[in-house]
Image (cartoon, rainbow, N blue to C red; front, side, top):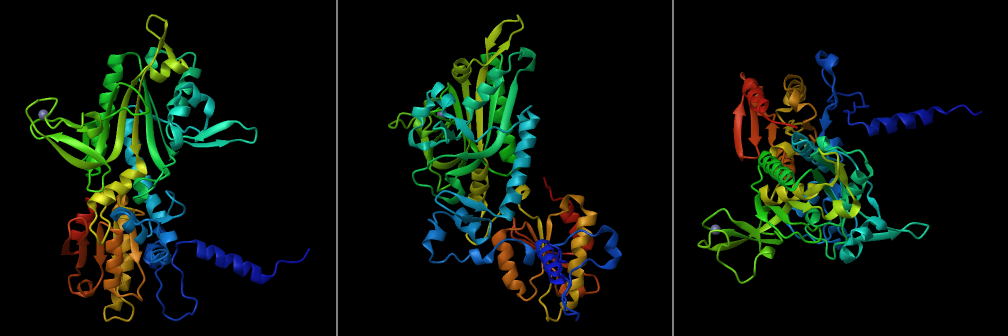
Length: 483
Ligand SMILES: [Zn+2]
């Protein structure tokens, strides 16, 4: 056997090196920019997140005149998300979710998990490949028309890519022969990719063909119990949107092809919203225009108020289903009298990728993304001085600050990035930081070299700039909530 040549090992080493986010020491040996932690911190070495190493490809930003790559730049959130290197178009209605977007998505998923599990939801994961047999049983195979992505396996058997999972989950529960009334309400949910053959995908992640959705399904002993479950899910949705700082309205909605007796949408008011909402000026009544006779402009609830129209992005939807699916698939439980009874059902959706894009749509400025605090991919960005500038010596202060924050404030671990692109001016890097929308940007400059060092902190959510000493900074950032 031929011995491995040394250059092979060199290549392996270089490969490993490139793969890491760790700062690379200069190989030239001269006092080049080195961002490794100083030795006093060696016991706590954590990899520093360097902006220069994050995969947020700037070469993808300038999609310029290439309309194939650009897609239809139809709204602010799509444009900003592409500019900031969060998403990249692949084919119509489908996107690459790049690492920064995935961080944000994972945070959103954690918030959703907390709220769903807070009302007793249990998370599971169902196949995306759904058998046509189930969809034919519920009669939705035909009803869904062209929206359903259909395919055949090698044996010629029909499947669809699941846009929703009422059939699948009801079949699962029906297969459990010994389900007792004591186990109800049963709330099962998943957060998975869903598919819909949109005729005209647009608005980036707001109307795509492939997207993430949270879908929950409830099983109850009675109609009354099912209404209570319905109410508790609506309250959980309201809490969720409040935590994200999104002012969503709950409106009466059409039950569409899901079917059932009662339905609400959670709508985020926005100019580009595709849903038309009517809200009473006088009372709490609000509804999707689809649910009301089109010529009506007086309120059906108080009968005196005038209905005012606005636009919204649908971010959540709840349905009381009754026995529509449980009857068809025989999802039963044994009652207190030990008799088989058909369960009462509800289903509850949240557009996960849509919430992310809708939040960016309504919160951002034209120049940069502004996040719900909890969902910002990184909370803090520290800018070290430009190389060769007269405050060059503050570089070490910037590097030190990264570690101090990580050690002093546990909730900020993994949340602080260092913009080490010191060949760029502070101004250029500030502009990038504004596009990505880190809630806190810290400029380490002249004021950190003064007798009492102060940090320039730009709070991007409020637009304020403050100068703080180290204690003041720790105090401010200590209040940041992360998930
Ligand atoms: Zn009214």
